[in-house]
Amino acid sequence: MKSSNPIFIVLGGSFLLGLLSLLVVALVHLLHPLPGWMFIAFPFGIGTGAFLVFYLLVKRFIHERLKILYRSIRKGKMTGGDSFTMTMSDDIIGQAELDTKEWAEEKQTEIVQLKEQDKFRREFLGNLAHELKTPVFSIQGYVLTLLEGGLEDDKVNRIFLERAAKAIDRMTHILEDLDELTKLEVNELKLELRPFDIRDLAREVIESFEMKAQEKGISVRFSKEYNNAIMVKADRGKIAQVFTNLIGNSITYGNDGGETLVRFFEVDDIVTIEISDNGPGIDLKHIPRLFERFYRVEKSRNRNEGGSGLGLAIVKHILDSHNQTISVRSTVGIGSTFTFSLDRFKGSANTLVSSRGIQIK
Image: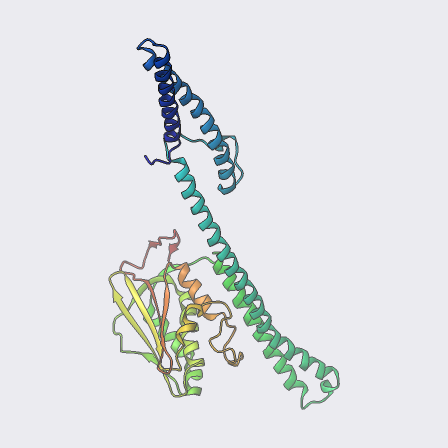
């Protein structure tokens, strides 16, 4: 036990009074001889009495103040069964100091988190308003032009309506992605985990980008030929969206005449997938925020090229829902590599039940 225990304070005070009473008995004995037992009984009685009095006073004094302290630092309202109790033999003062320090650190952490959440909320609302403002203003301009006479002009009415329709499609795309991201965050989307060949899925996505890649002269291919099936257990539709967003970004932001490579690595029970490009790359300072909603590496980049700004955030949440992670390596001027993993499937694909309790067909 430490010297800060309240019991040592009581014992110390009682011992001092016992010594003082012994001194008094000795002085009285010099003036008037006293029986020998007085030298033992009187100091012992004074010390014992002082111990009882000090014990009750110190305990009440400390208890009342610590009770007020713990009322402040304990979470929630204290009930009768929650009343503060203390043991005088324990280092309650030292423990109270530790509890108070821990409480102060927790509050400081909460303050930092609240500030970060508030900053994120303000940035998110500002980014959302900015993303929607461009198509809304475009639609407004086209509609006003048509109402002011353009509707009767066959040369412009159809063109303006088509442009307005594209702006509406962009808004719809943003809202659909935002709705899907919200559902992913609150775990409302159900995963249909089943075995499939990740190689075939990647090939399907690559083929869907064939025309877009040809327009920029970008080659999208596997890093090598994979002769055998690479089986994973995941939600095929959601992983298709992961490939679509990552490969789509590599084409959209890649250099003309560049290259996008897809690699697979099988290690034990994990299949690791890499999607690499030799595009402009991403500065290291942007990497930590790359998967935030609406975060863009280049604020000046044409938003009509970059989609809704939610693609990477959706990718991260899809992989989170599979209990997997995604990482990125990038060097400015050399290119970027996005890496994620999935559970490898090694059993029979006929009848299985996933770890999430979902029947796999």
